[in-house]
Length: 359
Image 1 (cartoon, helix red, strand yellow):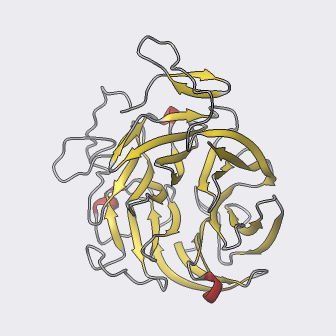
Image 2 (cartoon, one colour):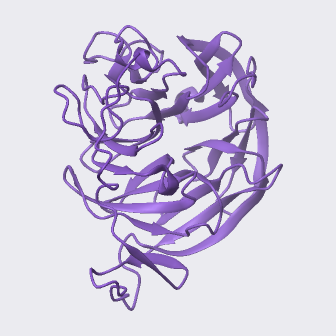
Image 3 (cartoon, one colour):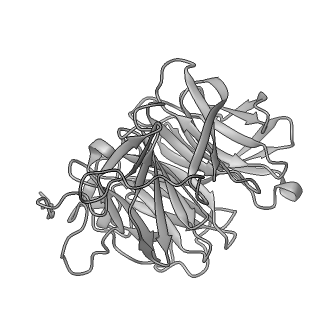
């Protein structure tokens, strides 16, 4: 039996009171009156939102192609689609050997190779019969094909994580949940409860702290990954009952689970930069632009904007609260001052891809 040590008396750190103004949430002053609303949108602040594409069934992963379109994976259909900036959707194929027999299984994330114009590789994270896999396929611009397993042995039993992204260093990062075996998050020989870092061929990346795929450990259900303009890695994490987290991830660090859920004073544990109660959090997709993190919240049903200065986060502000349902993804559109956001579990073929303009 493990012991969870929490600061249960504290409310979620850094979350200001908010008021609804023009359909958005804005910070509230200590007096309870809404802070002044600027006459025009500030840089990076969500200003307009529209439905770019509808008729989706649990869109889970998104990765950009060089032409500005994106490949989007559906969790339960195991299919991958290309979506253009004008909203044209085309099926490109399905991922073989995928199963959806356990909670949070099926097809999760997708990552386009940084050298796609030369190698045509795309990478997928999915559940197979024996557990979670990271595999590589080819996409020639029309059809998805081929299949090569790069990493296996990531246990699948709920709390699966499943996000993969290429970092600015050219290596592939992956989030692996503890699969309902919390103690594995502290076991550096296990792939579960970890953030993994690998070469494009699935080998441990040079400089990994333990000489294995493991980059950081002590994670419960790590979800979103992004890098700021200084190359620092940020992560969102779904906790158990008390707190969800935003972490600044460094190699070899221990992020606490299951000893800590949220911030604690246990030696050797790295505290989150921000934490929420689940009612306003359960964070999933994560992206960075213009000095802020943008977090898609599932149970919280909102988009969080968290300003970042160096390694310090400011006061989060929530947008679109309970307006579009659960939000799974938030990704910055390359070269454009916009985000793409996907909804989650809205119903059979009822999910959407939303486009948000940033001021």
